[in-house]
Length: 150
Image (cartoon, rainbow, N blue to C red; front, side):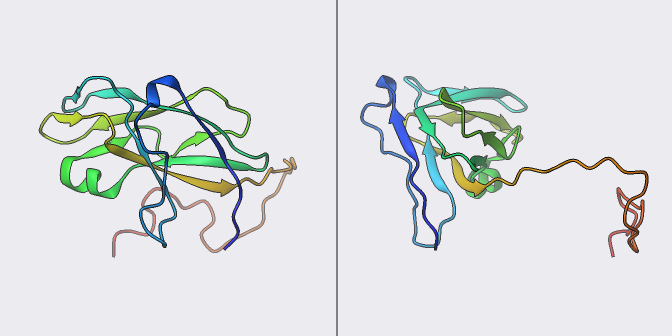
């Protein structure tokens, strides 16, 4: 498996929290933790930016994708509004996680809670070629439910 180095700078607010890490050998995402001072209540249908206390340096040609944690989604209805969120290779500010509560009950975010996962992905730049005609496919212009549910 190919590995790259990603520099992570813990900010002063991050003191005492674990660095991002893989929870198992087969994990593709590094767990990211909430860096809140006090408990943050996320009410149903509410969106809040949760700080991580981390800044990162992604190598050129890569991005970090911020994705929801499946257990939080299933058990509590907690998701990430702009999922997957993208951290570009030239961003050096604090990483923030935009959580939403799609559940029926308020959800408490506590300091150190694992609230998201970060996947490092290769980026490919596209060369845009303006054209009058696109390659034909069997699907053609069919979209948004054109194939049904069965």
